Amino acid sequence: MVALKSSLLLSGWTAAVAALPPPGRAPPCRFAPLHSQEDILRDPNQFLQDYLYWEGKFHQNDVSYNTANGMSYDGTQLDWKTGIASKKHDFSAASKESLQIMIYAQAISGSPEAARFLSPDRPHAAVDIAADIMATKIKTYLKFNETYPGFGGFLPWFNSASQDIAPTSDWVNRVPALDNGELLWAVYGAIEAMESCGHKDLSQLAAKWSDWLDYTKKTASKIFYAGKGRVCAVTTIGNQSLAVTSPGQTYACEGTATLDDPYEGELFTWWLHFFSDLPQEDQDALWEAKRAKLVSVEYEMDGVGPITVQEGYWFSSHEQWKVLEMPYYDVDIVRRVFTNAERVRTCNSVVIKNPGLFASINNITNITSDEIIGYISNTGIPSVSSQKKQENIVITPYGSYPTILINKGVGLAWVRNMLIAKKMQNTYGSTEATRIDGTGVSALLTWDSKVTTVAAVLGGVQDLVRTRLRRHGLYNDFVSILEREHSRVFTELKGEHVDLCLPEAHVPDTGLKDFTSCVASPH
Ligand SMILES: *[C@@H]1O[C@H](CO)[C@@H](O)[C@H](O)[C@H]1NC(C)=O
Ligand SMILES: *[C@@H]1O[C@H](CO)[C@@H](O)[C@H](O)[C@H]1NC(C)=O
Ligand SMILES: *[C@@H]1O[C@H](CO)[C@@H](O)[C@H](O)[C@H]1NC(C)=O
Ligand SMILES: *[C@@H]1O[C@H](CO)[C@@H](O)[C@H](O)[C@H]1NC(C)=O
Picture 1 (cartoon, rainbow, N blue to C red):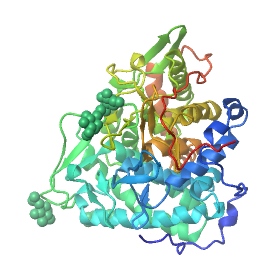
Picture 2: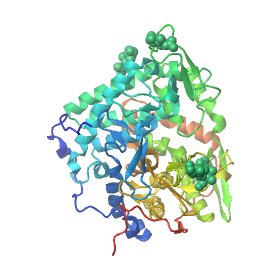
Picture 3: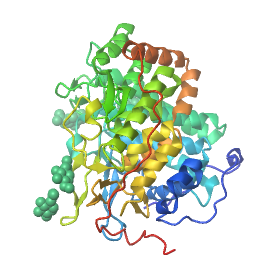
Picture 4: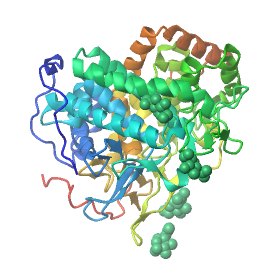
């Protein structure tokens, strides 16, 4: 593998990155039990420094990404006993790319927390590290577009182990809207960071990324828009090797599924709304098509509530991804509804004596076969969701990221409560997930389960996207559409006086042994 070069940038401008914490000593790998919940609530920063330090060990060649082409890997399984990276997932998707790019965007804009994640021993190198990988990555994106022009710049699930990425076998001639919506706004934020730091090399890099991003504005509606406000959830491409505008090229929705959700899929709706060539009538239709699923419901259980929330699909934390990427909380009614969601998320776990929080996640490792048993999509809070059939047996640290966005201390107290369970820390930070009953863990690392939380600590790219929307004169439109759509549904909110809840239960010790490479220190 090619070693990381710092050739792109010189260090003259890094002085702009002020007030980084001194490197200091490395915290112990099994740091979570050394912090009490009370300490975290009093001052989350100590825990956070340790957390970012170890979570950042995931950011390694051959573990979470490929230095040769700058592309993410979905993740890596861990050896059950030692906790050392074993079987790599050599594929990835636009959604994982969005997390990777959000971290780089914040590193480039000078975030000390992003620097702690990327380069704790040399915080001032974080900008170079992020910029170098972004420079490598854009080359890979452009090469992909050249080889597979039918994707119109968008990404399918892809194999990232070879220098040039290619669609995975199950994504040949297919492309998803949701993941790409996540990618687009992360890049939008990253471009803002690269442009505004006032360094020539980074401006040039921003221009390359802008070319790519602008190209998706031209192709988005052709590939994904199906008329009458409908957006294909997945589009079937006639021939991925043919240019978008080739006479023989075709695009059609795969099946009947459309992207009309009020959750993370909405990021793609915004892209079409702001940047595609759709006439006003279709732009309006985009929002009308989504109205049926924006529903107000009330949570009430065992004396908690009523609390008014937006109905979940499963109420998995994954559904809140959009708020990492756009400044949704600037709109009062949205912020209040989302704050209520965290009251429900945290208090529901206390009511049902759950030591953690639910989000769609990989199931536990089958120790006999050394394989992950499956993926549990359907997990959240059934009583406030449209999908009632759920499998609520596994909890994951990233269930906390929407809580962190509302209240860092409370969110991190939940993270801690899951990390102290057996095997839930390793030499790359947090482990994917644990069963509530403590009989198994998912010995795996993924961007989804780890870096959503890191991104939330950084505030996602909300600030960068806000600045850029303003720069482009789109911010007022963003705010007024959110106000219009939410005030139709949310009139009176109940439960706004309820406090966020803190964990009370613990994952029981059933005799699982911590990973041997990350054990508690003897004292
Ligand atoms: C992507 O490929 C198409 C077709 O070859 C080309 O016209 C377009 O300029 C490329 N986009 C970028 C950003 O290079
Ligand atoms: C797709 O297009 C490429 C490039 O024109 C062509 O070589 C290939 O035969 C086409 N594939 C099919 C299945 O038609
Ligand atoms: C675990 O793997 C073994 C061996 O392949 C298999 O027989 C068993 O059914 C698996 N268990 C689960 C729960 O998937
Ligand atoms: C998750 O694993 C449990 C065994 O621990 C199994 O009973 C269940 O069916 C699995 N669910 C999925 C979706 O993989």
